[in-house]
Amino acid sequence: MKVFALSLICLTVLITASVSYSEEIANVNGVSLSADDYKRNLAQLSPQMKMQLNNPEQRRRFLDMMIQRELLAQEAVKEGIDKQQQFLDEMELTKKMILVNLMADKISTQKITDEAMKEYYKKNAKNFQLIHISQILLSSEADAIKIKKELSAGGDFADLARKHSVDTRTNQGGGDLGYLNKNQLMPQIYQVVSKLKANEMAGPVQSQMGYHLIKVHDFKSPKYEEMTQENKQAIRTAILIEEIDKLKKSAKVSINEDAFKRTQ
Image (cartoon, rainbow, N blue to C red; front, side, top):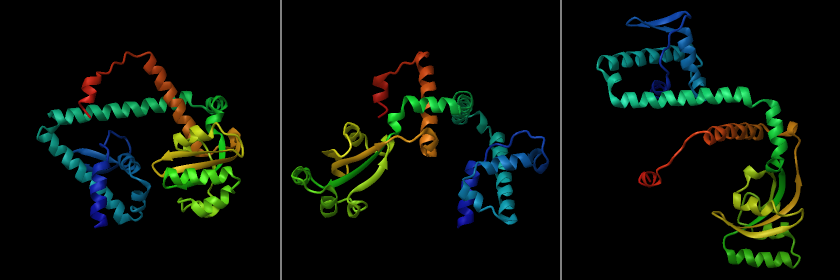
C-alpha cells in the first residue's frame, strides 16, 4: 500500500524531462532521460519521500515512474491534449508561477543582503522585541472580571492562574508563557501588552480561546546576531513584500469589486 501511494504521489510531482547533456539513463520512444533529469525529479520530492528511496530497488522504481510519466505525456500529445484549452490554461498558470519564483529569487539575491536585513531590523526592532508575559485564561467574561477584582485586591497572579486558568498547558506554571514576540501573539493581545510596562496587568481580552488576563513581566530586545532563524526568515519575507509593494505603487492595478464579490 505504501509503495502504491508513493507511486501516485511521485507521478504527480515529477517535472517534465528537459534537454540535458548529462549521461542518458533511459530512452522512451527517442526521448532521452538523463542523470540530470533524474536528479531534478528527485529534488522535487519531500525529505520524507526521499528517505523512502534509500535502496537500489526503490530508486529503480522511481526511474520506472519517470518512464511511466514520459509515456503518459507522449500519449497525451498524440491525442492532441496539448492543444486543448484546459492544458493551455494550466501551462499559463505554471509559467506564471515559475516566473514568480525566479523573480523572487532574483530580488532575494540582489536586495535581501545581510546588510539590508540588519538595516530592516534596526528600523523595526520593536516588532522583534521579546515580551515576558503570563496569562490567566477564563471561560467567561464574568469569571475574568471576578478574578481581575481579586488581582486588584492584591491577589497573586501565579497562584490565581494555578487555581483558575483553563489553559492546561500553562496553569500549573502560574500562567507563564515565557518570552514571545509580536508574531507569536494574537493581534488583540499584542495590542494590549505592547502598551503596558513591566509588572503591569490588563484584561480581560477576548479571543476564540476565552478571556485572557495578562501580566507583563519585562521586555528585552535581542541583538540582530541573537535573532532566531524564524525571525530572520520573517525579515527576508518583509523585505520581499516591501519590494513587491514598490512594484504595485508604480503599476496600474484596478479591482472590479462587484465581480470579486460574486466569486465569494
